[in-house]
Length: 459
Image (cartoon, rainbow, N blue to C red; front, top):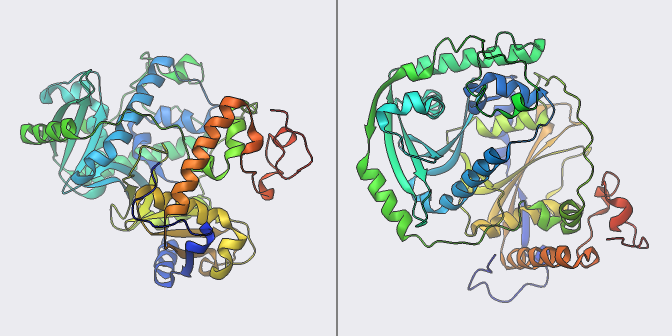
């Protein structure tokens, strides 16, 4: 994490660079969206690719992922993270789109939706529906949500030369409305399965016998004899067109981009906010309490309702903001181009703008760190109040402006290094204590020393 050049001298405190004001117009806009919510539990595009996996992923106990698959998942996430800044010029990164209780996250949204996949090999365009049906279906669903007939599939294969091989294929679909109808149908089947705790009507899982972690853990009831999907979305493919011009341009851009070899050492912003908690999570993970399988509520909670309100605007209004560094791994979600925090609170009253920094510093710190990573000087805090009796009082939007990002850049760098040093030396006492309100529910409170200055640190 580098401190931006030309920022001048370090202000006396980070609090002195923060100003807070109510964003009343946006608050009213989101309140109106909240009034018009669907009331449906959201179903993601990836859930619709394999309904049985989506069912067990939601109601079943956590299962270990096979090492080979975990390696592929980690590699894919790493490639997506590194390519974020390099592909940002192609369009909006990880654009959210929501419609009819369905939600998708499009890798790149330009004049057409673009899905980026990593693979071990390139498949000819004509063979994609047979050998990569899940890739085609996912792209087709994005076209269905957007009412656009053509999407682009980018496939990248990493090579020892560090410049990935690239394939670009434009896929034209016959009828986006028919695709969306199939998505709604599948979502209804999944919601019924959740409601009735039955998987009988869910179609055969394409991963049965192919290393599915739920099958390996004996969690699923699949036999491999279940009926397949009634309407595979690959049937909607009209044409597949190789885009040599696009893949040549991207290959040139990726090869000329500066390659950063370092991996992120910080996973989430909360590790910087609460480094002492992060220390114990890294060195002495709390014993996991066995989770009982339970059916999900089909009634969305407040956080889900707020998410729907925020994401139900124009496609791409909510999207990932490109970061200036590889750290942390956690993405920065933005609303209309500025970092956004979406939180719920059990406070009895709405926040007073002039008191936010003093009474709830975690919000300003979190947003300040996100702004420092993305190079933006303002951010939005969207808060839902669980105890409010009406939508008018349930939602608050505050804009935070930062006259300097230097304090947050420095804090990130110093706390990241301090956390690494503490883990190496087994010396958590050097790290900033967590706030008192975190102590009661902390599984490490008996040994960390936070909130109880006289308690001896044991690690």
